[in-house]
Length: 308
Ligand SMILES: C=Cc1c(C(=O)O)[nH]c(=O)[nH]c1=O
Image (cartoon, rainbow, N blue to C red; front, side, top):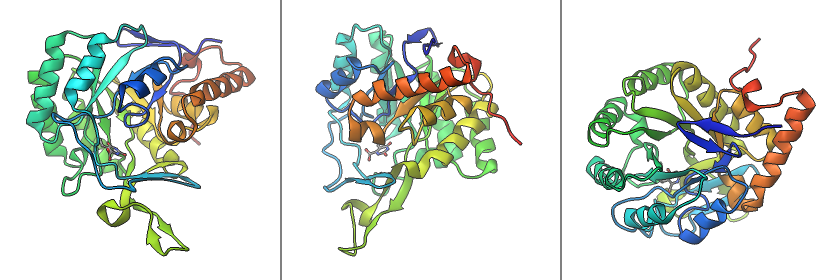
């Protein structure tokens, strides 16, 4: 069985890696993922300056997944550029960028370009947890403007982290924007499903503090939405890669994401709860499913979802 993935000049020994935001804020966490069975590593979205993020409690596990309103806590972009400069592992490293303004994002990307590092940026168009800031990915004109500026100023291959879309007209509109940028080589679908509200029956209270309890949902809650976004963009963005993210907790969901068209698959909530041993377990489960179905390689079933 061969579970490796080769794409954009990179080789991943496993199709699994962390979702930005999980196990990737500090060097220690990044090193745990790098030394794990994960096929790649992605950093916590970074801003120009370090950020403490939103008041706690700001993350909660639930029976069906998670809710978070972290508020973009990170060590500042230089910390992650330093980590990338010292990084000498064959395992691909992605740098997630989420500047508070487009200018900040361009500044970060310009410094990344100057370092001529092999790591690709995953530009976050979808943070749902900055009070007062709408998700850029839901504003098609603003997204086009950002992608135009990034293409001109960064002028190298990059990817974007997209929010979930829920309407074929929006899939089409965003795909039209994304297809206008040949340097945009991959999209990661999806970020958390924004602004859910988890209520605790006993306390009759929201369970996280920021935004009156509103936060991004992950885990079982989001799997069908994640799979729909992966499949729609895999079809609409014919010459780009789609990275699946959302609801992966076993080999089954990883298989579904790849069947829907994902080149590789990120793990968020499950990784946060289980730790990096989740990568070994999920990979073994994926291999067992492939074995049972007679597939040797991921290419044997990638994008081959049947419809009725
Ligand atoms: C970068 C901020 C994000 C955050 C956050 O830091 O609150 N949480 C998410 O679920 N997705 C994000 O994109």
